[in-house]
Image (cartoon, rainbow, N blue to C red):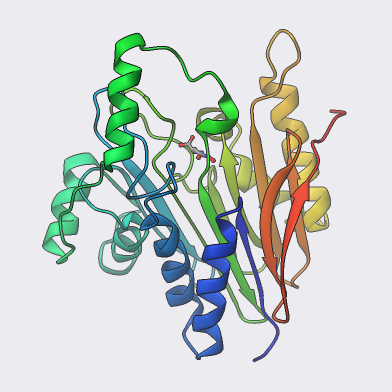
Length: 292
Ligand code: SD4
């Protein structure tokens, strides 16, 4: 196989990257590999922040966000607050391929998924339902932000392709209708054929407020390495949105430049990601950026 680089967020990024790499080895197009890699995490019931098994909103409904972008042709598609479908990345891809629109939300997204032949299924797993019932007793805010945001985001790069996608159930116990960064082009993901791609994970409200991934790609366009672009974009988020005590929002970003240069940065310690260079898969862990 020609040169290739795959990267994905979090420990479950390994599952996405392994699945995608297997398909690439069999000759599948990058977009198919990306979709299948993300589907593997969406359908894994044990992952409580993506697809089936994701934790619901305050009203007890699982609302899923996903987006996909193909740098070639600068095409994108996304769905937000989608209920009743376990593979939102596949619906997002269909939006990209058959509609003139960039984003469908809520009932419209579900109607479109049905029209396209996706099977409507239960998205609330027994474990997620149980946790929601317990939360409803106290309605306590999530105790630990760290257990509350795990988007699967993946980039696949080859010398002539860059595709990027992400999928999440968003913040647990979120307000119904809340849409995070993941389905927003420029916030949760971005790709430019001539420059590269970026994908984010973390506090999606804050990531959206600074258009994080657009900034990473813009910095690469200005000549930054992928690593410097990720570092600088996270620093910008920290400067703009840290709280009174100086605590930054949780966010991490992965980027690949059009020449295959790779970068990763996080606003907090020990952000795990998967990286496959075509020969072997490694799990990396990124330290927090400390100075802004
Ligand atoms: C969101 N960014 O909806 C997503 C949550 C997430 O890792 O899981 N990020 O805010």
